[in-house]
Image 1 (cartoon, rainbow, N blue to C red):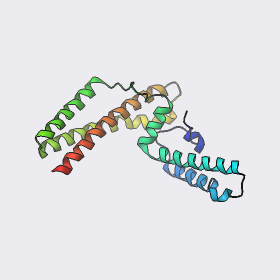
Image 2: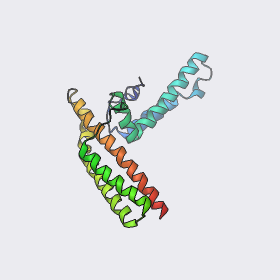
Image 3: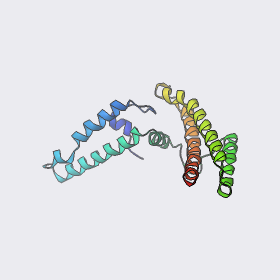
Length: 178
């Protein structure tokens, strides 16, 4: 199991940590675990300090990036296992329609269609973001018996967002061609 970055920083598990507190913990531990300050320590202690410095860097990289943080939390709860990534059929149909339009653009590039697909994808993304915002904001304060339901909602959001990200990436490719 991966290390608990929230515990390492003495912070509660949250999807929206205080960025200043996170950065402050990172810099404090960076100083504390800097290998140069432990040059005269035993080789075993130097190795331990190096591992702690690496843990600090990995924790900060993960927790300071919203997408990585979300994936990290969902993984810790066993919610991003391969092959268990089913999504609602209505969403998959919407995405399939967008993908079909993208496939048509491969054969007949049309800036108007690219713009329309981009607007549809942005609208879907905005709707998703607006719908999940209160869940993300309130997660930390939820009773422990309600958190699994919230995590399922966040998991669905995360998976949908990844689908839409691929559509946005495809659209970017089309935009660079024209």
